[in-house]
Length: 354
Image (cartoon, rainbow, N blue to C red; front, side, top):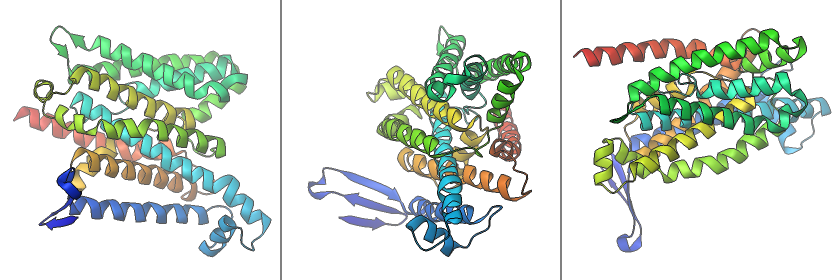
């Protein structure tokens, strides 16, 4: 049974065993974002050095009467690349949302607090030192590097009165700078062919993404996103403060480490697939929060859709604006994200001064 009350849809199951209040604005926005993402994917499949119409793309996808060259371009290059962009954007956006909830700081982002850099250092070290095992071990090495960095930052920001979100952010920025220096040293003194391979990966380019990357990110999304959704109710309690959450029966320390582990996993796998993409986890949660007020569950859905849209758009712009030259998606997201970060930082400082 569904009842509409002003700006909310109230969904009640028979027997009143479950009742959900869903904001109409957020649901409409989610639908529009889904349609926008599908439209962007369709546009991405038609644009390139070999332009095709939407009818030809659909024919290639559905096995219609099109040339073998069109089928190859769509299935082997454009379609997997576009899917990877959408999956990676989803993972980075949700990672940023989880980190912002844990730290209760809107400036938390995997690329700002060292998590993406930890994955990057691990993958670059693997590529430079042991290149023959790079593709097989890359996801696991990236996750291990991110987890070590997250544990290090958590330990450095801990004091007798508990963790501090500001200390977590500041320690993360410092550790990220240190890790970036080590990564640069590895690339400077490594063999030139291996260093060039690592440099192409560090640019955050989705150019070489194929079906193996699609399978990897899709499988890890199926593993990591459900626990995040399950933890959404506890995340709502954590937003009111750790002491309040404990009073409501939430095991705050367990939920905190679970959220950090999920956030690290999402960022690490996304980074392992395409390289570091900065500011996606910073932009998407803030955009979702500004566009529609909602509970944590709907907010995560909006955040995921916005993240997928942003990275897919960044990849399309980098591919189409200066064709045949291709700009890495990581550079495009940085160009978009840096002004947003400066604006949020100034806004935070203005609030603290009041």
